[in-house]
Structures are given as structure tokens and as C-alpha cells.
Length: 252
Image (cartoon, rainbow, N blue to C red):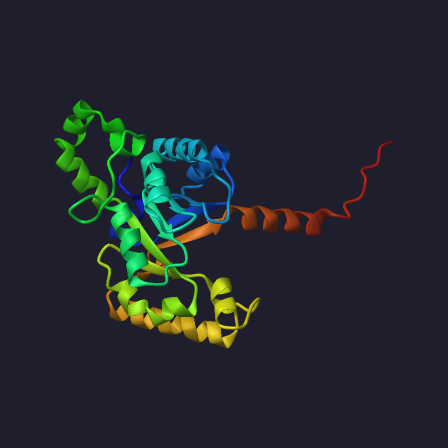
């Protein structure tokens, strides 16, 4: 797998740019590569991906020098280790509401001594092949150091409870940044369906201020995501707006 392209882009002084996918498509991964994007982001919470599809996406992305990140279905060690074993290099935990949940998120992503990630035989662990580990990393300890250095960990905050416990969440060392689920936050704050309500804007501003004060970035500081479904739909709608009434060609 390549070095995490988020970290590589940030070291160059720029944000990383990822295509966000809600359904499996290796063709979209190739198109993202041809467009010069840094990687693809999989929505495993609201989208539909099985593990073999995630692994195929990782293979195609990695072959093109891109990283794969994913929002997992739930903050739990089992799905997180399954995604990482396929080759995913960034994990977004949805609905993080407590410091304990943030710690589970971090621990599940990182090998000891930094965390509690379990060892396995998947492609994300170089198939647990000792000669490969020796050649590429100087052994298992070198692999652990490299893997931990290339995992990007995001806590998604989506409720009043997450605001109440924000100080505990951002105190977890392994968390690189936080992001904001504005629609779910709106529902939690009593204004469902109004993500642009002032209550939601104020909550976002408060989270940003407190996170930065604790030394944590917002996800938007480090990377952007271009949603594939919205991009395709916008392009098709514009095309139809421009060409719906194109006249039939005449002959003779």
C-alpha cells in the first residue's frame, strides 16, 4: 500500500482531495485517479459495501497510488479491523459521543503500544508474510510503526451529547481530527431537517473553537470530499437543462 496520501498532501502544504462513494465501483476509482485525485472515501455507514468490494476498491486505488478512507457502520473493533484488513488507511467513526467511544475508535485503528488493533492475515497486514515484512519494513515491529503512522482517524460528532463530552473526545491522542454531522446534529438540537439553522451553526462554531483549542484539526482542514452521486446528478441535471428542448435534426 502507498503512504497515506492525506499525510503526503498535507506535508506538501495542501488539502487532500477524495472522491466519496456510496456504492461500489472500481470504475469510479479509476476515474478519480485519472482526474488526479488523492484517494477515495467509502461511506460504509449509509452506503452499501461488502468486504470483498472494499478490498477490490483498495487494490485498484492503491495500484494507482491513492489511499482509501471509510466511514465505518459503527464504532466497534470488529468492523474497524475488517476495513483495515482490506487496506483502508483512514477510519471515520460515526456518532462519537463520549471520550470512551473515541478511545475505542483510536485503539481499534492502532497497534500496540499506541492502541489495541488485532493482527491478521489480510492484505492490510501484507498477508502476515514474514519475508515481505522483513523486506519492506525490517520485520513486524517496523511494519507496526509504518502502519500506525499511515492511519488517519476521524471522530464524527452528531449530537448534543457529543458537544457535552467534546473535551473528553478531543483529549484522545489517536484522534487526528473531528467532523460534523449537520443533519443528525440538527435533529439532536430539536430542529430536524434544518441543517442551516442558527442553532446548528452555533454548535458547529463552538465545536470548531474547542477542538482547535485542544490542538485538533477539523476534517475540512486536512481534506475535501467530492460526493460522486451529487457530482453525477448535478452534471446530468445541467445537461438536461441545457439540452432538453434540442430540436430534432432535419434531413433533405
